[in-house]
Each structure stands twice: as C-alpha cells, then as structure tokens.
Length: 306
Image 1 (cartoon, rainbow, N blue to C red):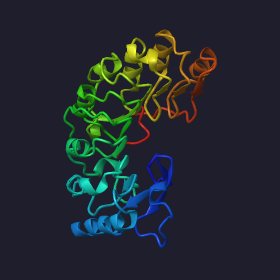
Image 2 (tube, helix red, strand yellow):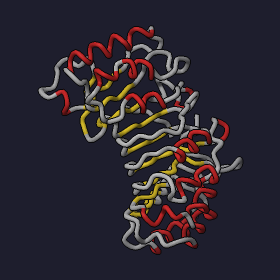
Image 3 (cartoon, rainbow, N blue to C red):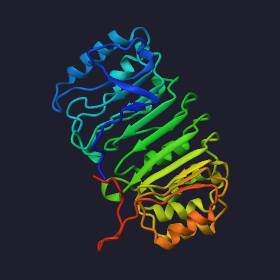
Image 4 (cartoon, one colour):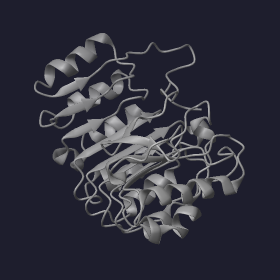
C-alpha cells in the first residue's frame, strides 16, 4: 500500500487550499491546506503562502491546518520554526497535520521531519496533531494539557519517539496512533518501549489505541494480552501490520476483549480459521479482519514501509 491520495477532510472539516479562488463565508468552518506547487520550491515560497493564508483567515488564523509540500521535503525539514514564529498569529489553531504528502510528492520514509517539541510548547491549545514521516523526527517528554489526539504515521518509528510519548504528560489525550513500521526504515521500537503506555501509567484519559503498520505486530499483540490499559479502551487497532496466528492466538488467550467497540486487524496474515474465531469469539465487537495477505518466501510485511 502507498499513500496515493490527499485527504479531503481533516478534524471533521472540509479542506480548502490556501490559494482557492473563493474564500469560505466562515474561514473557521474549514481546514486549510498550506503547500507549495513545486517539490523544489524555494524556502520563502511556503512563508509567502502562509502570509497569504493568514490574510484570508483573519485574526487568529485557521482552526485546522494541513501542511503539505513545503519544498524539498526529502531534504528540508518540516517547517516547525515557521509555525512557531507565527504562533501569536495562529492563536485559533486546534488541529494540525504536519506533512500530509503523497508518495508521488515524497515517500513516507523520506519525509524530513524535525524536533516537534517546540511546536507543542508554542501551541498549548492544540487538540489534534497528526505527523507523517519520521526521518529526523525528535520529541522530548513534554506536558501538554490541550492535546486530545496524537498520530505518528511512518514506515519506521524510532523507539526514542515511542518512549518520549510514554514519558510525556498528556492528561487529556484520548486517541493515540503509532505506525511502528519496520526496522529497515528506523522502526526499532520493541514491546518494552511501549510499557508505560500499555501499563496504563501514562495517558490516563486514553480510550483509543492504534499500534499500526507494525513489523512486530505479534510481539505487540502478546504484550496487549495482559496490558492493563486494554481494560479502559473502547477501540484497539493493530491494522496494516504483519500479524500472524501467533499474535491472534495471544489476543484470544489473553484478557477479555468483549468490552471493545472495535478491533482493527485489517492487512494481516491470520489463517482463515483464526480470523473467523476472532470474529465469533468477540460478539458485539466490530472486528475487521479484511485484507488478508499471503506470506512471501522472504516473510511477512507491513502495508507501508518506504
């Protein structure tokens, strides 16, 4: 699977380009896409685009912002500094997607990210942060009272990022999504790195946990089988990964999962028999076992890597 199309909505709002022909009657009723047209655009072009966007959205800027191509995203880091410098003019910002690029613009594992800690510090009222790409990604343990939703999409998420999330103080975070990826693209996290999250000690408000696109899906499933955090989840998602019967058996043999509203397992390597058991033994739970894969001679694979 590749990320081949741009999203059309974000934070429940339709997305409008910063240079669209018409300005919506209410600029706060849409999410704005900020991007440059050419992949090799000069650095000042994204700055000029932001200036134009701020002129259209009025005082406080957009409520939701989707940042796409900023110019040489495969070499130049996501423009954290540009957003931080303009934080006083972006006081209404509640939702941010950092680097919503398709594979034609930049493969997910080539997207140059940066230290996102200053971003969280500069926007204390931010409620939703989605991040794509992990090359150069950094995060220091931080306290943020506003954040409700945090997602890292990657072909390989470094263990230090997973540990930083677990060490951070996000008292109101309800949804966490980590695309753990593969070791070959920097995804070196193991189940032990998830321990603070799985133990329930971190993220006290968490009700939705997605540990997706994981090469170590079986290992993660084994850890979840006895993880205290599971008891207070309504949604659990292990999709896009390399889950096999080993992980599926661990889920069935572990703690009860019948309290869940949904269990996402799509793109998996479960046998037909075990996939059916998961559906039958979790009545009332929406169990998604679609997109069954066949193991190759060289092994199992995640949906997204490069």
